[in-house]
Length: 126
Image 1 (cartoon, rainbow, N blue to C red):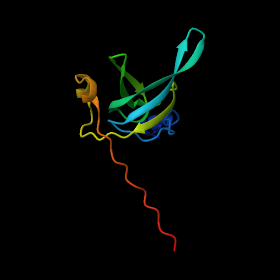
Image 2 (cartoon, rainbow, N blue to C red; image 1 turned 90 degrees about the vertical axis):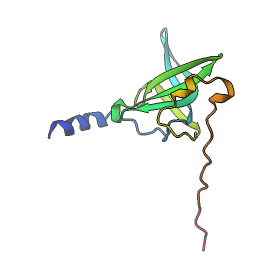
Image 3 (cartoon, one colour; image 1 turned 60 degrees about the horizontal axis):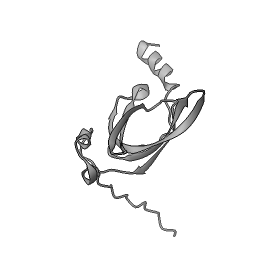
Image 4 (cartoon, helix red, strand yellow; image 1 turned 60 degrees about the vertical axis):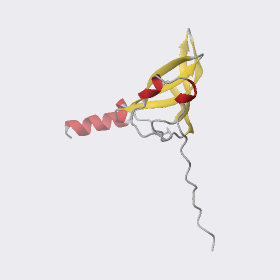
């Protein structure tokens, strides 16, 4: 077994596979485990994915939300045990891999166009 296969076999154990597919521009609703004193509580976090980086175990994504008029960004490792759940609320239509330009925009200008969902074709019964 060479070095590459050894690293791949070790990292495969830590990769989560239950996440739905999401891309940059999508609005996601997450539930994050937060440690407060002796307790762990679940904190909701909803925002737009503005970037994705890496692959495999080291994959991360950045989520931005506006909280009390102030922009908040958090970088999450995709395979973090702190993420309890992730749900895609809406799909965004963007033409870039990183939408950092949202940082300078305020109010309604921060909106991202919604992708029109493709209707699922169901075969006709014969």
